[in-house]
Length: 238
Image 1 (cartoon, rainbow, N blue to C red):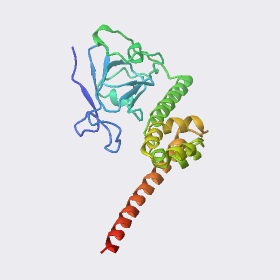
Image 2 (cartoon, rainbow, N blue to C red):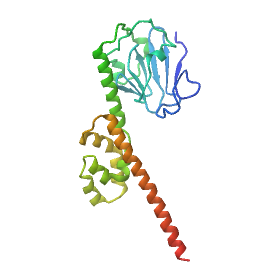
Image 3 (cartoon, rainbow, N blue to C red):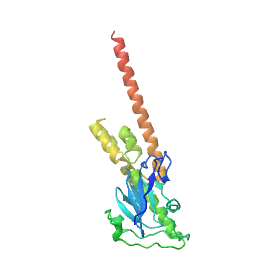
Image 4 (cartoon, one colour):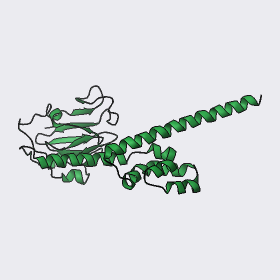
């Protein structure tokens, strides 16, 4: 017997509500329900969900108490919030370190055909370190997949500063045509992460955000200068 679905998202009527500032989370991001013996997580979002470091998008998968769940790869969904609607035995829980084959293969599962057990016990230190490592891997994957606006607007200078001196060579041959801009925008984050040493993912994000602000700022300034030049030229012609 399927219980009611518990909604997760930014919509005001969500059962598990996230702050509107969590812009990467969809209004109706996911639903969680029980079929009597298992908990089922159904992703209905735009950006997907990472469960045990594996991306789930528009799929229904079985989840176990203690699984690592990150909405849009950034915002944790903790089990104390889930437990309000699906009470568990009040014992310390062990994070399930084994991979769910249904999640790993990214196939939609039929929850009624699967049986998985809940494992209880104190959380080991090694498992906490493993969970932290998995979360870091999720953040790296998400951040390096983003479109890089700094590289899009300023790719010759951005490339030189991010370990890709050959970006200047490309600019000599292609100039400021749109093709290399688009290419660097799409691939820039991955290239920068691989070609330069970073202290951690937060250092990487801060630097790339700074390039984005400079790129957008200079682009807007260039547009205003162009408009001003055109207006002055038209005014002088009268």
